[in-house]
Image 1: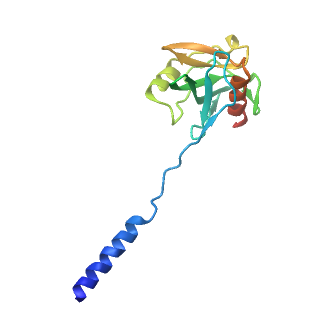
Image 2 (image 1 turned 45 degrees about the vertical axis):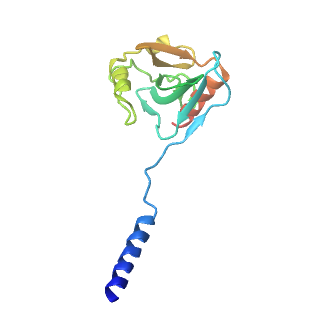
Image 3 (image 1 turned 180 degrees about the horizontal axis):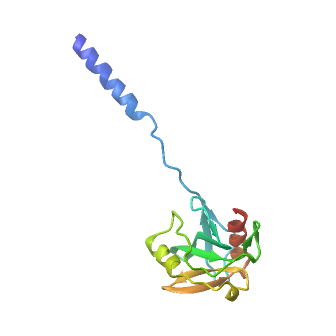
Amino acid sequence: MRQFITTLAVAIAGVTVSCLPMPMPALGRTIWMRGRTNDGAMLYLDTISEPVYTRGWTIFFYGIKRGDVTEDKIGITPHCYQGKVKYNPSVSNGYNLPYPVWATTEQMMFLRDFTGDASSVSFPGWITNKNGEYFYVKADSPVSLSLLNVVCSQL
């Protein structure tokens, strides 16, 4: 009987320990921007992927949803300065930009090959990868400008 009680006590202790909550890794939160782009897409940011600022460029992670298709993207902009959407006067050519810790292999290759000339990006917006090519996204809708405002305010 004593052995049964000891076994039962150990079993209960094991169940109790296994029921305790385990620490969870920090999770990001998806922030959907209100409104839609000029072509009807929705934009979002993930809070765990903090923007990276270097040599006047801001590198950030965002997503776009068109219909049922959602794509994670990387954006590079010279239009963040002192927490506002404003051209950064200290921007240099985009050679050798750092890889954010959250960047995928494809995004790292995009950054590795990026040699952007900031003077060609005169209207607020960002450069991204579209079908393997560099593509300039003008922040010409309220939602795209809102996304850029949120990114710049994090610096």
